[in-house]
Length: 322
Ligand code: NAD
Ligand code: UGA
Image 1 (cartoon, rainbow, N blue to C red):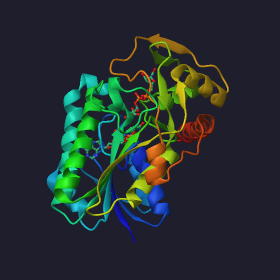
Image 2: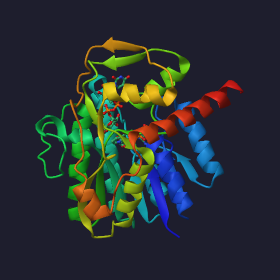
Image 3: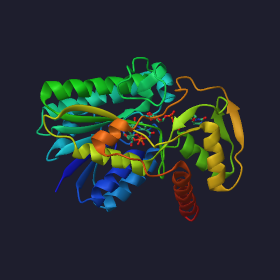
């Protein structure tokens, strides 16, 4: 039986990865610090639900060497997702983003070096393409002009993964995810926030004029990418990198219209100034993901939003009856 450690396992993507690993028969350990970036009570509820299904949940910080060593004991591979994930938040508090995303990743790599574990999947970001790439982004773009401290921290994480893979004979796969959404989506991100506000009948804040373009990726597709990458890491396998996108892009204005369709009522939009550090447009070239991972996204934006809205409605109903 495979034994996998998922850092950030109580978070949005991490919780879905844990569930999918369990479903394929893995023994899963989740390490999460229940970081206050958004409501830790929500992460604790997710962790409790995962524990009830058989995940071994550990509370702890990836920066804590002893905690990490204990979490690595007896596992075959690591999916490292723990991070301070917000682009805009990294401008106000760059130190926390850099500490968790860069030093936290270094800590995981050092943990691997000191242990028997030699396989790692690392969560990078489409934001690393920065200001010097035109979508669709290809992995061989220079990615030398990150537009936010968050983007710089993820680029640094990639470099550290590449260094450690070569220096210490690890097998590391870095995945550049493109704006993931779905059930349990983060409340700071456009889809999670807009759906929640729409169902509450509250206005949504729109940064800029809605012309920003994103490749939106349904969470199940992102999870497929993680599992495919995990299966292709091998001790001594070196470093590999590829995009994991949703297969189609939409402007934020188009996203709002699609959410209106999914919810069945118009959204009240409140215009705000453009967000500093925002990528003007993202889009993934998926040729390498297809070639290396056999990856192909399956869920369209309309279908993914319908599932997200159904989940959010069920959550609201469950909490209303508490
Ligand atoms: P999330 O915030 O929901 O999950 C991250 C989890 O890491 C949280 O549960 C948090 O408590 C935990 N954590 C934070 N600091 C920690 C620490 N020091 N030690 C242990 N745990 C810690 O975010 P997410 O959206 O699920 O993102 C998961 C990963 O994917 C992150 O690395 C993020 O940067 C990356 N990513 C996400 C997206 C997206 O659109 N959601 C896109 C690209 C990349
Ligand atoms: C997202 C995640 O937050 C990052 O963790 C991830 O690394 C990144 O995707 C990625 O793809 O690499 P972002 O693209 O900023 O970052 O995603 P959203 O927060 O969903 O924002 C999408 C767009 O909607 C942005 O232009 C943003 O300014 C806008 N937005 C967001 C609003 O107009 N209002 C909001 O309340 C939130």
